Each structure stands twice: as C-alpha cells, then as structure tokens.
Image 1 (tube, rainbow, N blue to C red):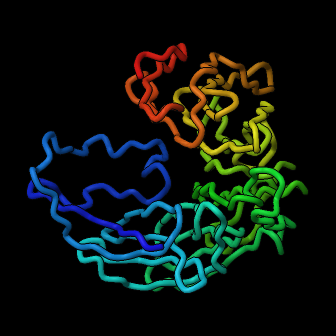
Image 2: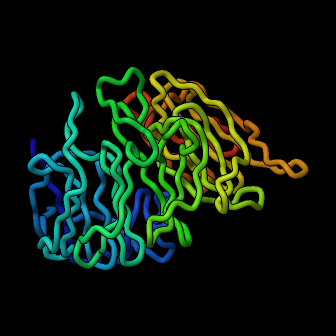
Image 3: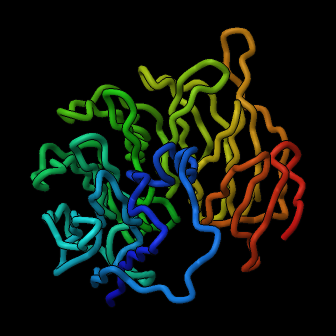
Length: 335
C-alpha cells in the first residue's frame, strides 16, 4: 500500500521557518519557537508544491535546515530518505533493517531524529543506527537483540510490548549522548550511547519497553530521563542512569503509547486503563518521590499524546472527540 507526503506552500507563509527535527518538535513538547507566526486564515484552495509516493509505516517526517527526512518500508527493507524540502528531490536513501509487517500494516513505527550533522533511526525490529546527515552513510549502530538480548517476537508475542508490536518509542539526543528505549529485562530498559561513537555510557532498568518516547527534563532540581515503560513510569539520573523514582502503572496489553507530558515538576501520562494521570516529582530529604496530584480515570486516552498550553491539556479523547483538561486539577473543561 502506498501513501503520499504533501507539502503546501502559501503566499504569506515562509517555508520551514522553524525546524521540526524530532518527535514532538524542537523542544519535545509539540510547540514551535516562541517567535513563530501563523496563518489566521487558510486560502480557499490548497495547492501542493510537490508530491511524492512513500512506502508503508507509522513514522513521522521531520525537517531540519531545509531538509526533510522520512522513514518507510521499501522493497523489503526499512529505509531512511533525505529530501530537499523545497523541491522534494531525494538526496540519499539508506536501508537499516528488514521490513516488518503485521495485521496493522508494514514499515517502521519510530520517528527518527536529527542532531547536528547526524541522523538517528530505529527500526521496527530493534536495529538502531546513526547516519551521516550529508550522505546517509552509517556511522555506528546497535542491535537490541544481539547487543542487549531483546528478541523481537512480532505477532507471536503474548503481550503488547515493543517486542510484539514494534519499537515505536523514539530515543532522544541530550548533550553528548543519545538515550534509547531498548527494553531489555537484563539491566537495559534504557541505554545511553555516546552520540558520536556509539559507546555505551550506561544502562538502566529491568523492564520491557512499551511504545512511548523518552523525555529529558530537570525535575525537583535533578536532570533526568523520563520513561513510560510497559510496567511503570520512571525517572533515572541523566548522568549515570541510576533510578531516582518509579511508579508501577498497569495497562491492559501493556499498551503505554503516549509520551509523558512535562510542565513544571509535573508529569502527565495516559492509557486506556489508567485514564489521564498527573504526578508531581518532589524532593524529600535525599530522595525523589512521584506523588499523584490528580487522576481523570474517565479520559481513557489510548494512543494520543496531550499538548500542554496555557495551563490546559488538549488531546484527542477516547470517543472520537477532542478534550480540554485543566492541568492543575484534571477536570475536563470541555469535549
């Protein structure tokens, strides 16, 4: 099955004024830069500047420095493509793994990310690669199975973890490192690599990965990696991977999909079992604790990631609708 990527250019629109180099945008919170301007009225007719066909997959395209990168399945492989964003002309393509397909479709499910002159991409079956942005050459890589013992089971798996439905969650570049949701139960739920060489800097955790993407934030004065795994929400120290706090969270089929939403010292997560839940990370002595602030159990948001803006959370709801929630109280304001 084929689908299309379209880019529309309007007369009053400055093409690619802001980069969108990773999942959820430049600051990982679904927001563009503060000085970005928006159209207040759409033209009566939308005409594509260019249009191309792409293969299957669930990965989002990203944009940086006038280049557009997308990730699809193509001739039996999962392939990263780099285009000139204005013309749609392909600059290079690099395959990183064999194609995977199940009853939901074929192709990669994790959004790549660009950091400086490098591209990082993760296949459905757990092959992670660092590519040179200029020419697509593979600079280093890691295999979740060969290097960390995470066997990809596909549809043969019994529960809905990444080993069954694919490695959907995007890793994140931070400082000198790239942190990846590997999902090994043998001490490598998260793996931190040197982003230039691929050297393992630390490993942390004994839980399977679900489908959620990672976050990095300073909460209660400590910089940490936030992971919504198959069995919990946890924070680990950015420097060494030491677990700082953990909240067990159980969802049917272990389907934790939404990315944690962070504002202040608060973290909001969601699933079709727990609903929408907010935790505050607070320091008590030398310990960090995750304290539940509120829970809206009726909002059983399954796959969507809410957006925080102006003290409210906006999201697709559980009933083919849209919802607005007060971020302080969890009260549904409208739907």
